[in-house]
Amino acid sequence: MARTPRDTEHIVAARRLIKTARTADDIRIAQAVLLPLDLGLSIAQTARIIGRSVGATSTLRNRFIDDLARTALEQATDAIAANEDLPTQDAQRRAFGGDLR
Image (cartoon, rainbow, N blue to C red; front, side, top):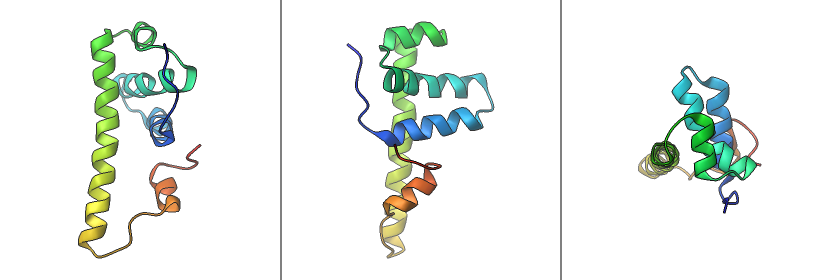
């Protein structure tokens, strides 16, 4: 069964990666995130489309999502260390390149 989208920032960041991709691997990483979330495809279907195994596709996806979480945590930690306010939703929109829908 396909997953339903939970975190729109993953979709926004993956769309941004497609626009700025420099390699075929960048596009595959973005597709590994977008195809299941945007189109409701399974990981197996996504793997076939991007030409990777199911395990490799899951790894691409998980690394992308982990990197987003790590970046958000670093930004929050930096803000706390600098005694600043945490990023607002507007700041998050700017960081992820636009609309969070």
